[in-house]
Length: 433
Image 1 (tube, rainbow, N blue to C red):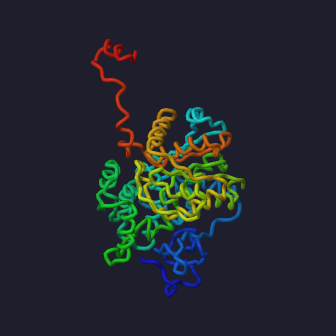
Image 2: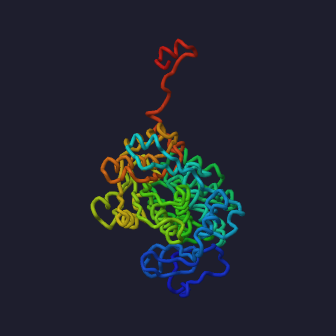
């Protein structure tokens, strides 16, 4: 389960017959382009660049493919022909995530001065209430294909819960690793599914380093780490956000998207998904802009973007947005490339702005976002004020999780409007009548 070496790489890079991951044909290095057979590997043997899934995507009539997708299940598996999963994936025990609402946010748009149509892609409606269910669902299919018996991950919270739930549903053992200081709601949600939950003293980056060591040890034999040795397959689940957004817009590309950055993988895969839709003829090929959003207390990509750098310097996280608190984001350089290529930007907001944005979204649209959603809404507001977002363009802002997981962020400033005695006089005295 370690990095594949040139000695055991199949030069033809053909998929082993025993591995059925649908249209996935090989793994391809994002840096040098070298191809490898499908397997539990994540880095190129030649240049150590990250690997991603390469496909034999369906050709032919785009209208026929659209009809096939629209007739599919009400989950991400309607896009199975575009994902590294077997054709019968919807028939297997899994959590069936996806098909979450794209909310037309007119009241929020009015407050922010957006006239071109503002939408919130609200992924809090997934089975464990975050977008992580999408990526884990893909990783589970890879784990099954490669014969793993234990599902694992390093996590800032949401992923731990998603892995625990998906493993329980699939009949796999789970053992997940988190920083010791996560929000209590996320800790409880990760533990309730009955798997092993291990808290590690340190930051997420410390947890991730430990997991990388565990993969190389005999203890880790038979373990599928969704965001390490299964990462190429896991990451593809984020493409389904792009697919759904375009389908929900009537098979149209949005003009601009605001996406949170933790590792940066979600942003890069949404861009990949949009490009695939264009290539397949499912949407019209026209420009779109991608904007990345970070918390000021963990904003290495935003800092690199503003400074005009190509290298993302690691930082030590210090923010209430713990789900985005990855100080050394693996996909940071690719995020910079995409923001610059599309004419977007990467911006950050401080903790006070995050809380204000959570409350603004809740008050205007009835969506209680976790702190990552506060980051995207807060950054949207900041980008509009700076003239970087076009208020007349169709804009999609991602909310990736449920605010019930991050109650501490707003608890100190949110509560009863008044405490009264159980009679009308007391109600009137409180000024509520």
